[in-house]
Amino acid sequence: MEIKDLTRAEEQVIQVLWKLKKAFVKEIIDELPEPKPAYNTVSTIIRILETKGFVAHEAFGKSHRYYPLISMEDYKSFATGKLLTNYFGNSVESMFSFFVKEEKIDLKEADEILKLIEKLKNK
Image (cartoon, rainbow, N blue to C red; front, side, top):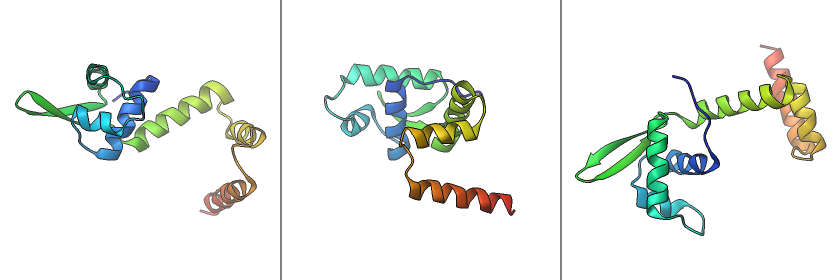
């Protein structure tokens, strides 16, 4: 299945669903930060996520309980691959140096990344 891009609002809702595993719209709203969006807004976003193949539902009478169809790991892989390709010319080194320059990675994290790279090289 092809993973599609999500809007910021869609990402926010799917992240709540990944956390809760299964939820009704009201439960999703309860997890969202203030100011809380309107019920209809979240309901619409959920239906869009369903159309995009990210979410499915179980019917309980007139209400629906939603659950994710795509794992957080699969979306993370898609999103980082897209970031790497579109902004760093497929160069992990370029992306890594960007995060270091922007001070998004501290020395301890850089050291952990280097240890991970060494471990992968020795496999």
